Amino acid sequence: MRTSLSKPLLFFLAIFIYTGLYGQKNNIAKEISDRQYWADLAYKISAPVLSNMSKGELKKNMTVELSPTWDGRNENVTYTEAFGRLMAGVSPWLALPDDNTTEGKQRKQLKEWALKSYANAVDPASPDYLQWKGVNQTLVDAAYIANSFMRAPEALWEPLDETTKQRYIKEFRELRKIRPPYNNWILFRAMIEGFFLSIGEEYDGFALDVAIRKLDEWYLSDGWYADGTEYSLDYYNGYVMHPMLVEITEAMSQKKKHSPISFDLALRRMQRYNQLLERLISPEATFPAVGRSMTYRMGAFQTMALSAWKYGVPDKMTNGQVRNALTSVMKRMFAMEGNFNKEGFLQLGFVGHQPDLADYYTNTGSLYITSLVFLPLGLSADHDFWTSPAEDWTSRKAWSGQPFPKDYHESIKK
Image (tube, rainbow, N blue to C red; front, top):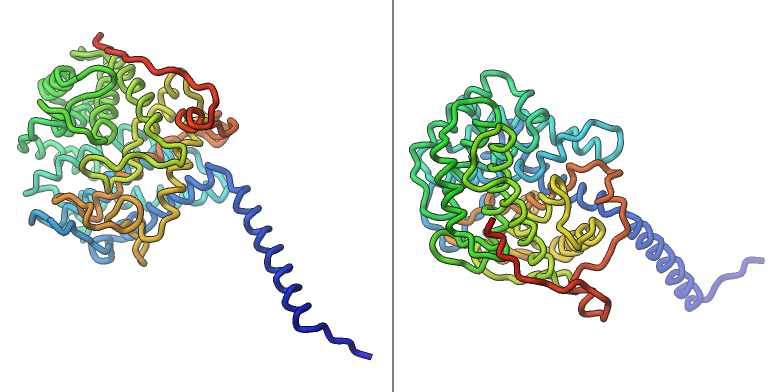
């Protein structure tokens, strides 16, 4: 004799099964490590650019979105910006040894695409030959390409064929004709000269000297540089000033070349900036939307990422604290719909799609500076940055009644 369940009972049974499965999915999601989240996001951001550019199809397939106040410059700059800024962020990650993990396969694929993309970028016969002439903006993103080589020379510079290397040297040298504005742009010229120094090529020591001296003159105290002769409340200390000055002076120190300020001094100033930057992350894992170039998203935290990867986190901070803070902000930002378009390219905005935030110089390519937060992926998976327990960051401790360290002014003039 067959028995049938009542409709109400079937309904509640279905709800029970669904919620159980949903709970299992949530538990699985919670088990994803911070590193896996970072790697998956880095791959998601990188793949549309590098997969297309490796085939010479970036200009053909990339969806280009321009600021509503676009100033009319050559739109081809967007591809140079996308490639240069992306590679400056993911280069340390791609330098790790191959392995058979899911992340390792992602990394190997991106590296293969990247090496082909580097070649296409300077090959006049390639459809993706970049905008090397006629636009001053090229100086900026050539500096990020040079920076990517400096961050992963054995993985990304040395494997290039000799023709490609000479093409880069030629294109970089041609950019000496550009006169940078009297602000953070002087570091872009200096970064390229620092790259020449690092590979043993003839370099312009005067350009290095001037850039470093001017930044020292523009140092305001307590970890902050002015952007030229005036101070601007924005994140350019993180986008440009601190990281480039630190890496340029480090290259000079390694080659035993005199620098107007030492690498040690530049680093101590950056670490002080990091202490303050970390305190700007709210208990809810947000940070102030201030200043120009807000569409650069997580690029604001390049200094923290650089320190975690290469120099160690600042005093009174831990790896678990920095990782948890950055991961939490990242998840808060990229959980919002609208950061990516249907083809997978980034869209104008800070959190989601907010095109009216874009400055007159901002395009789709500009947004890939957010990749600069991924520098700690260059640490092995067993490094303390990834394995240490997550800890609350400063403002979360402060606003939950936990002990947290006092903050003190530091001039750091010498």
